[in-house]
Image (cartoon, rainbow, N blue to C red; front, side, top):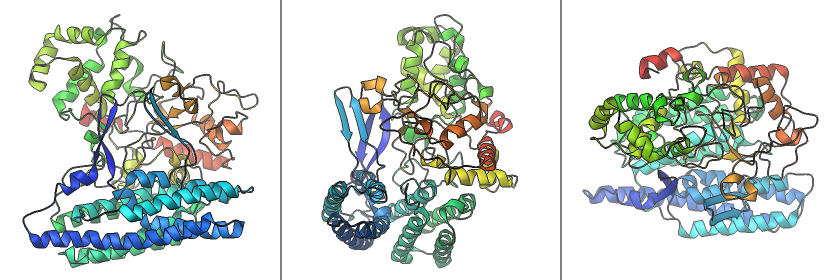
Length: 610
């Protein structure tokens, strides 16, 4: 079974290519010895993976036959630990099955178009955790879920083939494991009830250390191998010495995750590895929090040629050009003002249903608009052009307007070989927007070790964001939006139960049905995309309806348990309804941390001229 990665987004249709097919086509053929060596590595990894998988199956099978709370809890804990031991291989080799087995306890909805909508009830370890560790046991449901998980695991045990495995696969697998722990593992993303994320992180790192032994002969630099061993031991010790609520996630990422990315890059050089292509994270990413971390092409259409200074400058001109609209008074910049992090400061933009979202970091997601109805920046621009209260024209008129501008004609000639068509116009604007992801905030500079200016309050705010406050279970670091790491193939939506007014006594859900309006899927009512928290100090008012004027009001809403906490009852609310029990000092720490995510304007002006 091959992993399927989202490589490109073509006119809002996801195109998937089997990673297995791509990677097996990249085998070396110049040396029989090399082939045997690589095949042997795959066999060794598969052997360890298969052994732990069989043990996991046995525990899930025992769970499926248990009836007492004691036995259910006992077999679940062992099965979950064993699942975490197989996670690095399964998540890399077979991402779709891993996602199925580790899914949150909410329906999974796939909407290809209005005639192809699939709604699947989750059957995962998270479902087991939430139905076992609760006051009222539903034994029949637990057993049904366990049997389905057991059967899925058996299928994987029978069909997994790692014969294609080579050095670069191994390195990708290790890096994915490192990133997954730092971006979702330590946040409690997949252990919402037990909060046993640190223990599970230890299990993952112990597995990576076992795999590292397999590749010891590949190291030319033996000292580098020992650095890996020492670092993994130190990481495990760090996780073991702390509790979930007080864990210093800032220090963990700065001192361990980033060090491991450096060791990864050193290993690539030591092994002389040539990667066949680049996934969402660049193969030489220096850290989590860097402009060089992400391969922006992964998030864009296959036909895009890539950005240049000239192309970005063209896009900036088009973005600010009011002459492209029918009235001659509206441009993209009308609702996306650079000094407000490309928002407009209004509750709702003129003539629009919703609040204007920031365009900073918009490149690093897989879908657009609050309801995810567009699959690319180029696709999103179509709606802006044709909207009656925005450009209010059609694509043909847009192209003719550009063609009548001598400056644009010359620029398009040099960049697009004279081809002025609607896609190239939209692509130029999109490339400008893609340049607005700088990772140069105070927080970025500090976690990358470029300066030491974060206050204790700001660091504590980050740790709260990533832990007790559960913000990072939806706003994933380092982009702090809803695009799920480390594969970045899906941008999540959430049902928060946002009220129509800032009212905690007689709260009524806002009438905007969100994603339901796209295809009429009932289970999508009131779902909205998770936006980035970066530059949030500049983007008030907040939420899709602009209901909250301050960050204090936003955090109060979450602290109460979202809509459910203020009396709004919605079936699929994705927030835990429990009070987060954040203290006033903790709320202020969260706010100062989020303010530290404001991009540096002076650096932006130097780099992009915006």
